[in-house]
Length: 328
Image (cartoon, rainbow, N blue to C red; front, side):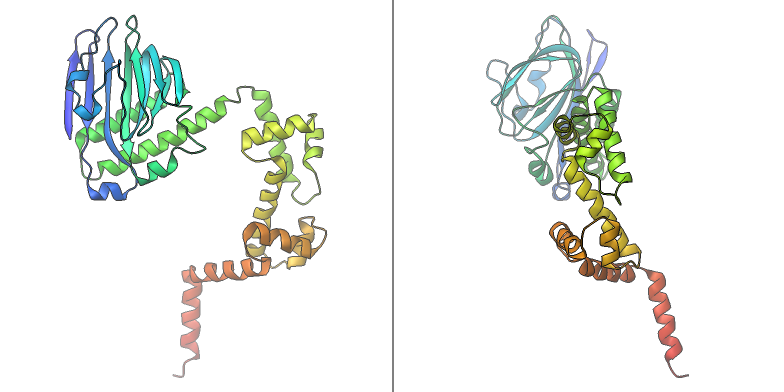
């Protein structure tokens, strides 16, 4: 690992540049780090750090750059701009996270009047490549507004600390932090779309009503009516927040309950069907097979065999029983 530490007199801060080595074991993990660090660029100054970066990371604001890895940049102070092949020029301010994609031309620069401070982490691997781009992250929407979030800052600092210690296994723990950061970034972004607390409360109330009425015939339209909402608006808001329609959510809850009853009770398939308000056992069996890929009886038999095989107490009981039956 190449580690560069520079003290900038203008900001009285320590700048960290870590370029990490990767071995075959790290690649097997599926996600590994390539670089991480922090730098503070003071106002009205030419960036003093670009010349010391390895050539693969060299950057010229007139030409931009293409990397063969992902990077997460967190701007914690100052402002500037960002653009890429799939993203028009966008103003950047403190509290923005920028996700860079491999093979994607990009360009960014800080405002000479403000400078900027940034944390970054570079990463790659089979899992990273399969995760992005996807419905979670896209080259056309690489800028995220999370605010000056202490949680993210603490994760960047932890990654830098692990990288600088370079102890055995540091790649695995540091890359796991990155995976968590990506999940957190997605979570915060999705929930920031629902700043109206009243809307979120209504959707959560709807989910509670659906769960509490698992044994009753209640339609999504009736749920909306109970909440004093128009069904069309309710359905759109629910799907946008939960990722599935209220009807699909209701079906998933019924399927979960059916699986629980099949594995953990002795109720017959017919009794389970009527408890979950299906009109006939045949209707229930068709629904279950379509959703679970097995008939209710097949699911019960397969699940209980697995439970028995993974239960040491049952295995011990069976052994003792076998010994008792043997002639002395």
